[in-house]
Image (tube, rainbow, N blue to C red):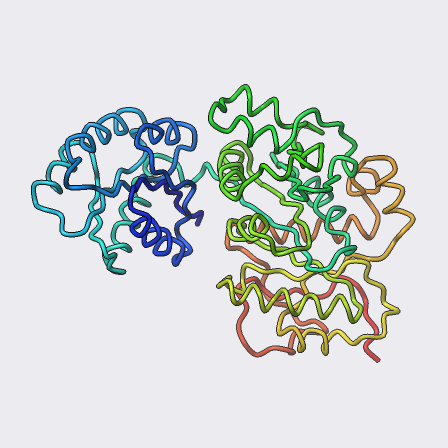
Length: 406
């Protein structure tokens, strides 16, 4: 189930933080924007089309708030309006409901009341069809450089065979365009600079098309432009673009900076890329620990080995035991084919449809597409089938590459 999206309006930083923390504490919700100026609320709601808006009421400005609620309700009727206040009078609650608010949230927030409000917002979103308008987002990440994240991102995006946007979030030095052979005129920096006046025509012009099903939103064309891109820019970008595509594939840098963490937070699946060497295994272990501290469920994380060779001496069972995580994919090492595809500017899955790399990349893409529908393949007996006794949410897959564990 896709998460519900929220905009909050509050002049009180403490109330805004309480609401943000409460929504962030559930996998069902995410905050798109936090606004302090009421005059910008309707414009932002029209641009972002969130599931709900939460307005923190002030007792001395009730009439203005009621007028704002009426305007918002008329402008974005599919968006739920929720008012929130501490020590609210019955007249304040009743007045907000008459103006068009659908729910009231008492501050400090009570967990059971928040769950009920989220249930009601989800019901309205489903009735309005919003639940089917947000892309499934896949973040491709490694905490170690040089593991082939950009190559895998480009090829997985090309393997989806449905409307897919490859988003290059390597803001300082991203070059995803070269992996799919396009020459972008605009980038994420242009999205950020024009965020307040985006319409369908402008959004379409920012994206570079590769084929009928694959397009790219490029990293900034100049390194200095990355300095002006914020976490909120990226959050809004993924939300807006997610309404126009079935899949978003995020090509992420190998650092845990705020923008990368924000993107990882919003991803439905994280494809964690590792190489089968000691530095690669150690960096993967560190990343898994950080994901655990960030509160990500293990079912959201898929570990895949890139540049795999059956001649590697490290035993797979020991690696999985060390990581406490099953390896779900093994992309074979074929340097000449990879370099050829990069030099040609064409995804390998398109120019080498029968290669072992393509077969494995398409299998991984199929697995990620299956996870969206909660239909991961059933466990089968394989070389690593008995390593872990605990149940897996993402299914257990037989290794597609013959391995020598002797």
